[in-house]
Length: 222
Image (cartoon, rainbow, N blue to C red):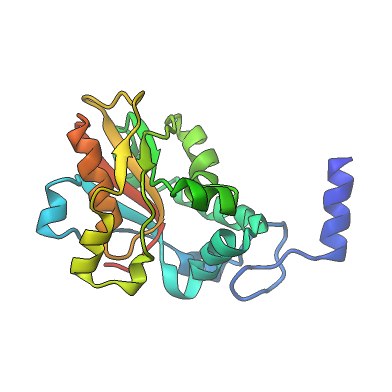
């Protein structure tokens, strides 16, 4: 029955590439050119202060011009139909040798948390939706070890000093978290200034984590 429904949907609403909108073979598919444009696995530059708490940071793709609309529509319009496109990109990235090398030492993945009221309003933490299946295939457990204990302002409105003040005291480790000696993979949807990742990593390290590396879906930092 599910196959019949899928075939009917493909007939009524033919699948298309999320960027150029050319027709593709299956739902969630990309045309080769656009997938190559979006999927650009790259290391993120870290400032000296961030290097004190982050072992490494990587992005799977670029944000502007490719993944921006997929991420924004998922977050702000609750458009879960974008997830198959993201899943296709993640599967395509799994063959990256440097990615596999980083993942080989990871004990636990931790998503950057939302403030509870925001997560309730949105209905999900988009980072968990983005990386859930990917982590299962890598046999890496996902744990909600971090809490956002107070609301924060949108980071894009703030300068560097304001971002630091905005995040101070915003995160805490859960009472049941067991992080001592663990190599943690901190996950987020995007990486802009790195202020959020840096503060989360600082809290995780204070709780005993051996190392914290970052993996995000998209970033324009090089």
